[in-house]
Image (cartoon, rainbow, N blue to C red; front, top):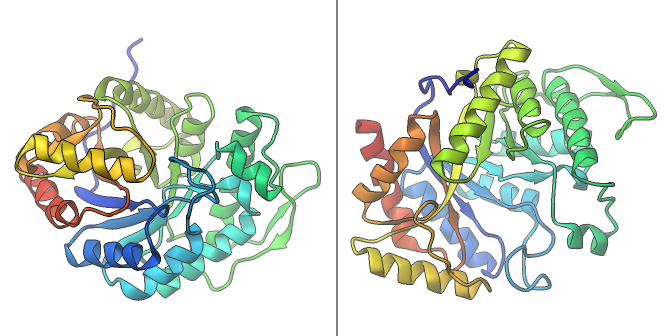
Length: 324
């Protein structure tokens, strides 16, 4: 039987940036977030890592939740979130409290992003239990997201001994800024058996990356999981991540991307199936096949030194795609 495909998009066309919190100074990171807000973008995201995941693992990196708290005070329009939070780092009740705090500080602009976590060196260095393997970490993610969803809805949540977490009548007050249950949850990852099932059960948003053919398969599997749990995949805002540099000349865009990655300790390996580089019309053309699969929200990677021209022109790409 042919896997179902994603339904026609039910969400507005959005574009945002993931500001890498490594290598750059706090002033640069601050200014990049303000620039994205003023440029009319829809969302600003950052990582949740304790060590850099590109280049030198002992290099400079800022912590994710506190970064969002600072951004909440200096931005006015963009949504804010982790792309995505490391579920292993924190008790789910603490995560819910942190997210609601950001939500109130930003007047309802928070997303609660979570993923299973994957970077073992930071867990070892900071004494955080990494679990026995990906399967265990994804079981923890399922338990955590289910508990968080209930707490954000106003419930008192108890998780018994023997599971990955223990909560004893935990409540979250205040409730989200817009009311009980109205703080969206974003889950990152594309594991077909566990992660996508958790997305289908609990998520308001999903983030993945890969070529069109890969994401077509993943969206089809997510649609199957949604049918199984009685949800419409169109209720989930599908986001995808790309490297992107906007310049009128493609070669100049490639040069800028190569220099930014080199500054972060990574060699640039051109990938026509992944990179969005060049003028806005070309990038919009590259986006449209993903839009046909339901991926309405483009999130671009923004490594230090945080290319300002790309920030300022990304909204033009979004608007071209929205116009069809």
